[in-house]
Length: 435
Image 1 (cartoon, rainbow, N blue to C red):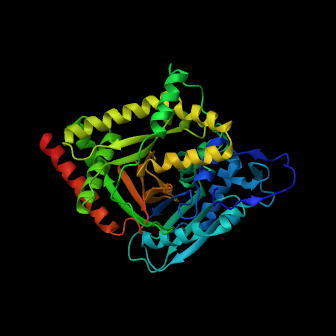
Image 2 (tube, rainbow, N blue to C red):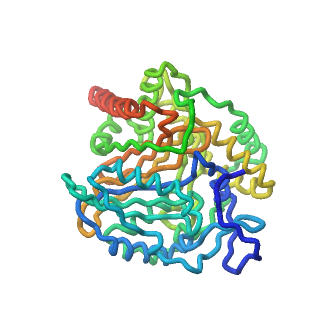
Image 3 (cartoon, rainbow, N blue to C red):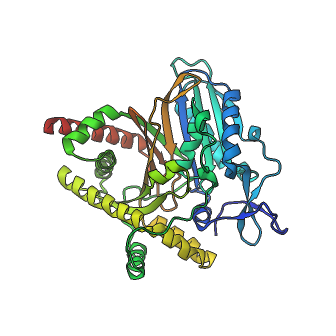
């Protein structure tokens, strides 16, 4: 079963206990030693931010997002239990680094995530990195990490928003996402039971596609960070007549195609692409606001054909979200034995080669203590059977791209970063020619 080590209690459940939803249990099931299901994020600030500021703002956040005050325990079944000794100060720390390298911060955060201390209390952490002798304008970085059962990408985004200037204006409105149950509302379309069953059979009978990342696996992590101009991407969108999501997926597809050709293993690729219910997320009424489906990346085709295939794939995923397929699946798994749920989660994960997550970012200009936030990276967890997870976070004028990868499976990761930049440049050049 799962290698996720949680606090085990033999005593009877207390009144503060709350059973994990099947959605939350899924992330516990997927958590294995070399693929810990811990999501994280990191933002950089052009100036120095003190820990007192961060503590004050996070303290206000957890007052209304009480899930962050709970720890995972096992009795007869996994549950959340209010930590009677919870203090925000135990979850926020500082770390001095020798220079302003984001890589140093990510390396330290990776070591922190590998520790078992995440299971001794509510499984989340915030680290404020202070760069010493920095020669750039970046002097501070703030990192957040949490087990995926605590929150998803949309929930993590809300914690970052709470640290930003002006967060106090919205901290008391609505029911916080981190507190809400993960049960989806009833499906809004007419998909019947037979159609639902056939869609599940098709997904679970898929065969894994041979990818260029197959190889040894490890618990080590490497993160590649790229920042793209949203203005340039907007011009390309107009030229191609596509959405930003379609354009970003095209760039990623073509870069992976380059990388596969470089390694002599073009093959095919299948990505897991979460689809978010953004309207519900902003109303703060639910936590599991995304459906998880497959998207086959169209390799070896013309640009126009790739756009067509991606658009069709995204339409299917949107239909899946509207039909509430993931919600129905969650209800089905909830009544099945845990061993069935465990194997179903791993089968679903192993049928894909990578994950691509697009999280809507901050609309307004993000600042902390009046200083600009220069970058915000969302770092998804790598799922079992995969070697790469790509996080895309969109702000008003930038798109921040983070590739989280296993260096054992992707040893020449620097070349993959080059392929991404080349794919971006070529796509923008083609858009200019078509304008």
